[in-house]
Image 1 (cartoon, rainbow, N blue to C red):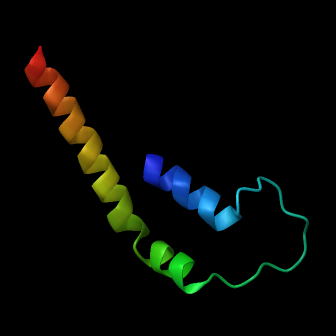
Image 2: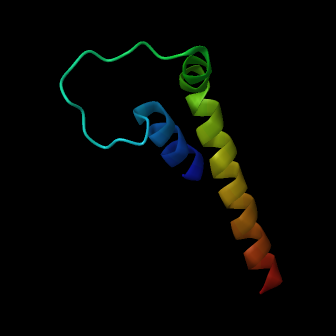
Length: 59
């Protein structure tokens, strides 16, 4: 979830609203993030699952 939030903020430039003007084309770094969004979400989910498993094993 953290990666998704970071990605949305990075793509939005940290600005919540939009002024209705033209949207600039994403740069190379942004385009790479967009293309790999599903992979990043899976990695983030796997990290969450691993943390949950660690907490469960500690109990």
